Length: 346
Image (cartoon, rainbow, N blue to C red; front, side):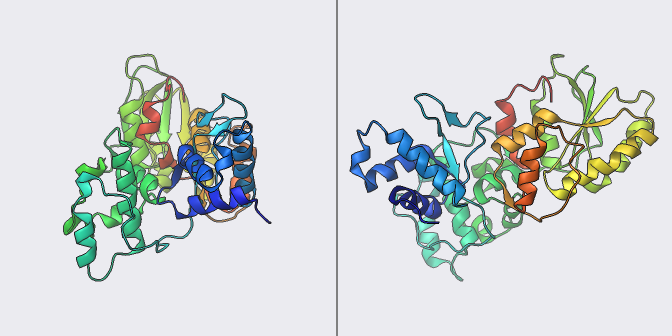
């Protein structure tokens, strides 16, 4: 596929960016730098939109869902507020020299640290430093979030940052969990009370459990009354514990990863819930829709999966995701996203 000149330039800007999400304003500036005729062109937005669609079709950029909030809709045509670079294999070995721009004052130790580091910094270490630089410069961290959530936004991998916390950027350099506004989340108790609502919401992963426990309304206005940690593959144990309680749930919903295993777990547990006398195990439709809107697909495994458990309007998008061999980690629906949402229902 041959790209237009503008699309080619934007592709290079996205490819060399140290961010997972590249702001549209960065792309607009790069476009004008490459073609000054765009500065006052009445069709500037049309040309940018066409170029972005070229990149999307070529697999060189990921545009947010147009049903979400990540679009500037006026004036016409709509343009995304940010564009994602495709997340490839880990440790992509970006350039090991510090970027030409000055480091944030809280990272003033970085240039000297990098020149003395032996062996030289790895690609993942540089990716983390650059991600923290962007986060600090843009004041993007508004809450102290679980490590898995910050890891996704900085590194495109929900587990990588946890492994790097004991590495030399933290033990010998100046990075800290306080600087990254991240915190370790321990394994929670099985269930927590949220309010008087009828819904018992089971969540697959610990980071999302913690973030929902902090953002679901507790003033009686929300549908969720109880939050349960589903413990991944041990969902059946969580269901058995709920069934053994004196007052069983009235409305039972589940939210997990969008990957083949993450869909199979609740699908196979429907009959378990029924056999225990529990109400039907339903998907948390609004949370799954939010995950599809804000999440960045990552490499996964192609698999034939029964999607009938999911809401009908979401199945085509999930089918396309799986057909492409991609997945969405639940942690994309993080505390910062949840804090900006209406969570009266899930």
